[in-house]
Amino acid sequence: MKLNKTFILLLTAFMFQAVAFSQVSISDDGNRDAHPSAVLELISADKGLLLPRLTTEERNSINDPAESLLIFNTETNCINVWLDEWYNFWCYELPEWSECGDNIAFMYNGEQVIYGTFESPETGRCWLDRNLGAKRVAQSVDDYLAYGDLFQWGRDDDGHQVINWISDDSSDDEERARETEDIATTDQPGHDNFIKSDNSTNRDWRSDYNNNRWNADPIENNPCPDGWRIPSDDEWEAESGGWSNIYDGFDSGLKLTVAGRRHNEGGYLLDSPVSGFYWTSSLSDDPSYPEFSRYFRVNTFSFPGNINTGRATGCSVRCIKD
Image 1: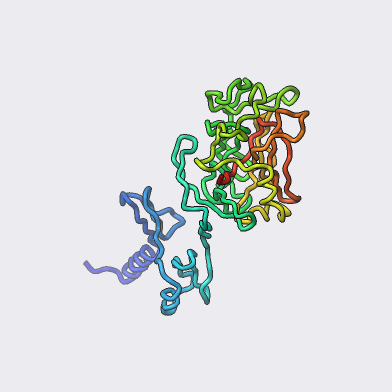
Image 2: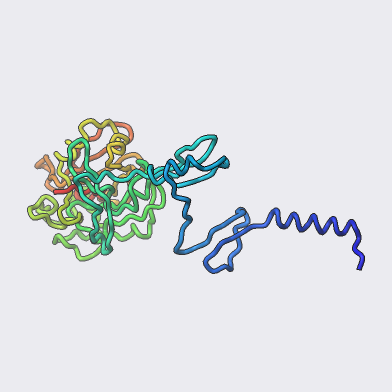
C-alpha cells in the first residue's frame, strides 16, 4: 500500500510528540502510571530514593556538572546542589553525643522509641534531643512534628498526653476528645482521659494535691527513660540564663518548640505557635496554691521564666539525665 506523504509526516510528528511527552513511573508492582504532573514518579511502600553518596573530593571531580545536579556529601551530611558552584541544599546536624552517650531506646506510651541526647554547652547537663512524643528533632521553633505530647503534672505516659498535631496550631480533635471531669483519687487513674479540673475549686487532676509525684524520691509516674527525669525549676533557670526568647532556646541546641499548652478546665489548646510551656518537677512557691506546680515558659517575644500553674494543665516534657 502506498502511503500519502502528508500522512507519513503527520504520523511521524504524532509519534515524536508521544515520545517527547511520555511519562515514566517506577513502581514496586509495575502497574501504576506516573502522576499527570510528573515526568518521572517513583512509587514504593517500603523503599526510598538514594542519591549518590560522595566525599567532597569525589564531588569536586565530577566533570562539567549540570545545573541542579544533586549528591549527598558524606563528609558534611548535606545534600549538595550544583548552581554554577556547589551549595548546601539541605543539611542534617548530627547530635552532639559527647559524654551523654549513645541513642536512648526506651518504652514510651506502650511502644519502643529511640531518641538522641544532647550535652548543653551552657551547663554540661545531658538532655534528650526532643520533647517526649515528638516525631523528630525540631527543625524550627514551630515545627509541629517536633511538638510532642502535653502532660498533666505528675502523670505518667498513660495516653492522656497524646496530641496528634496536624499543623503548627491545631491537632486531631477526635484524639483530643478523650476527656473526663472525674478527678482522680490515686496517682494511676486507670484510663487515658485528660482530666479536666474546675478553676474555682481544684486545678489538679488529683483529689488530694499529692505532692509526691515527679518531685519524689524515688520518682512516681516518671515518663522519662531510666536514669532520666523531669528537670527542676533551678535546672531550667540555669539552662536559660542568657536567653531572650524561644529562638535562643532553639539555637542553644535544645531545639525547643512553641507547642503551647492544654487548658486545665476546657481541655483546648492555647498559645501555639507563640509559646512553649515545659514542666519542671518543682512544687508551687506560693502556699496559697497547693494544687500548683512550676512550669518553664519561653515564647517568641519576651524573656523566659518559671511560673506557677495548675497541675491539670497540659505542658511539654523534656527529660534531663540524673
